[in-house]
Structure formats: structure tokens, C-alpha cells
Image (spheres, helix red, strand yellow):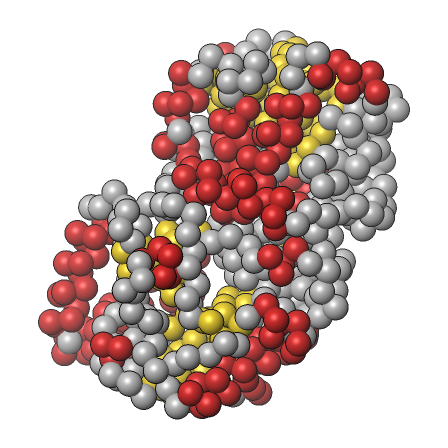
Length: 562
């Protein structure tokens, strides 16, 4: 059932087998996986079904440099469904190499292997509504699928990998009915966890403190608690719970909030392909089950190891949108309408360019002199995105010249001084706000440069094209917008060494036997992939572990052994 937390009496003490804090992709996936196993589950959501400004304001905080990282209340959504209410839907798994300890990526290595997580990816794909778990073009599209770039054949730079796209699925809307009718799951809306209270010895959660914006306060005593509140908020809760653990829960070695990662991304260079435009598949394809997919360029794992590269992918992209010299009416129209577009994409469309009367006029002229493509684009956008249930993922334009920029999306190496900490300022519920100090390394930029060099070498060797980019401006191109998007990763990282990690291989906080973390906060490394599909898979894996751990009889034996 789904109820408002304001219906709970102040001072009440609720009990449950599992209490999950956060109803985004991780929290909802975990709740659904636990349902039907003889357990009672409480799922807490700070917001309601719709956006609510005072609730969203609870995310507010500081950033050390807003050019490098957006304020904490951007990108993340504090409502039912979490940030799946605004995500773009891009899905892909991590690669097996991402789980390895790699000399070229400091602080790398997961305590689990890809094979241990692989069984949970198909169900994650299903929950995300991204079709079947198939990320190879030939397997997904069939043996007659045309190559990404005809004439380009390389063992070192692969072109058969796919990204799949969700509807994009709003988990709050999509799974509200299942949660509503589940007899063993109760969702509390408007319920903000303001503190985790441990037993006197600090080895177990005694209860969670809950508050509503209307002034209600009550407690929840769970057998097991799971934080699924996102990479920033999870660290905030752990650090702010200091009554028994003075440095914060799980922070005995000052690791909580450190190793904070996003992704290194930006449009780079010019790739000129020598074939005909109709021999290049740079846009979206549709699988037999009706799911949008897109190809990308990726360096083989063996070559990553040989050249010492972090993981990265490259997508074929259109020219820089702010420059009216592209003479494309659609691009100019998007730039002129950037104020009507969501925060993340509007920021990137703006590109730091100051609007002048001359620039405005040149973009407007592009729109006026390119009416056919502009009209066709608007018609397609309205029918295939605005009105469609499964939406066309993003802007793709006809390319008549076979000239592309490369949209890079690369792994950021974890570093301990990239971190989030608490400030002295409190939110409306008395919780200390966060300060975000996101940092990248010169090695992140160098790895992308070496990746681009390899891609360029392979296009030259094959005779399929030529890549030109300016190494001297590469860092500027990649860091033009700072940390990419809402990929908040690594602040409660998983590991086997308590001195350098917060949770173990089962996502349990090392020092607390009944406290777990679900979500990208536990990722030790960021990979090339958007984190959503993997955090869902990890949540499903955690759900299986908890359902076995807390099963009647088994749980009593486990607790006695602890």
C-alpha cells in the first residue's frame, strides 16, 4: 500500500523486517524483489508523486566550484520514482574489465566479478523496460544487421556494442500499482529519514528517525535498513548520524563521501568518413521488440590493458550547437529554445555562450532558411517523442556530409580527495547540508587523448576516415560543463578492505551488521556506462541476499552467530 507519512502519529515506533530509504530505481527494484518472501517491507520516500519545491529544497547545498559541478539539488529528484522521473533512459551494463584491478586506474577493483552480477542484468533490463538483455548489434538486430560504418573493420576499436533505451520508464508511475496492491510492502510518502540511530556498541541499527515537512516525527525499528537515497544523500545520512559513531556511520577510516566520481564527457574533434552518408549508422535503430538502440565506438579490453587506458566510448555526434556556422535550422532552433529544455540539456545547449543580438539573428536565420528539415524534425519530435509512450531518445539529425564530432563518455579514476562533506548550514528538517568538492585527474584527460589517438589510427589504417582533434584544447572540451550529468558514484564504495571502502561485497556497511547500501554510491569505479542498469542489477542481487538472510529460521541462526 502507499500512504502519506503524515497519517502516522507523532512519537510512533513502527517495526518492519526491511526499511528502504529512497524510492528511486534502486529502492523500488529492491522492494519489488523482496516482495513475496515472507518479509514486511517499508519503503520511505521523501516526496510525493509530483514534484514539490519545499521537498526538493531539502537537497540544497554547496559546491566548491559551480563551473565543475552543479548544485546538489539539480539532476536528483526528491519524489516517488526518484531521478527516473527525469532520466534519459540510456541503459548498458558495465564491462567485465570494469571489475578488475587495473594498474592504469588507481583504486580500481571490485570485490565481486562481472559473472557474479551477470545473472541479475536480464531482470534489470526488464524492470527498466529496455527489452531483452542483448548488447551486441548482431545478436540484438539479427545476422543481417548492417555495420555501424561500412568499410571500417578493426579488432582494436569495436563498433558492435549497443546502448539500449528505456521508455524512459518512470519507476514511480510504472510500479505504483504493484506497490499499492502488495500486501507485504508499505510505501510512506513525505517520510524523510533524518538520522540512523545505532545500538550502544555501534554494531547494529536500532531505529531510524523520520520527519515530515508538516512537523510529524516518528521512528522505525527495522531488522535491516537499506539506504537507497542516491550517491549524495546516502553519504549525507551516514555522515550526519554521529551520536554513537562520532565521525559518522561506516566512517571509521574517513572513507564515506570520498572517491566521488561522475563521468568525463564532451564533444571532441572532427571525424570525416570517406564512404557515403547512407553507409553510416549514427542514429537510433529499433530492435525487433521495438526498443531504440544506438551503436558506439569502444576500445577492446585487451587493448585497454596493453595501452593503459581507462574505459571510454565514443558516439558519432553533430557539430557544436552554439556555433551558427553549422547552418542547420534544427540545431539553431534547439539553441534558441534552450531555456525551455530540462536543466541538464539546457546547460549543455547553452555551452557557456553569451547570447548577443548578432548571434541570435544568425541562429534565427538558420531556422528561416532551413524550413524543410526544421518542419520534418518538429513533426518527428512531436509524434515520436512528445506523444509517444516509448520516446525517441534524443536529437538525431540527417548528416549529408559524413562529418561528425565524437561525443566521448569516459571513466573517471576514483581519487580520495574528490569528496562530499557536511556543512554547518542545516535544511528545513535540521539535517546538515552537503558540500560537494568534485575533482578529476590529468590522467582522465590523458586516457581520453590516447583513446582518440587509437581511434584515429584505426580509421587511417582502414582507409574509412580521418579524425582530427586538438590535444591542447581537449581538457577544455571535456571539462566545458564539468562533472557529467547526475551520475553520482562511489561515495560509499564497495570493497574487502575496511580502510578503503564502506560496504562489503554484499553491500553491507562493514561495521554495522544490519545496515546496507543500494545504488551507485557503492560502485568502486565508474566505467564508461551510465550507472542505472547496474545499480538496478546490484539492488536485485541485494534483494536475493536479504530474502535469504532474513528468511524465517535462517535469520535467527544468522543473528545468533553475529
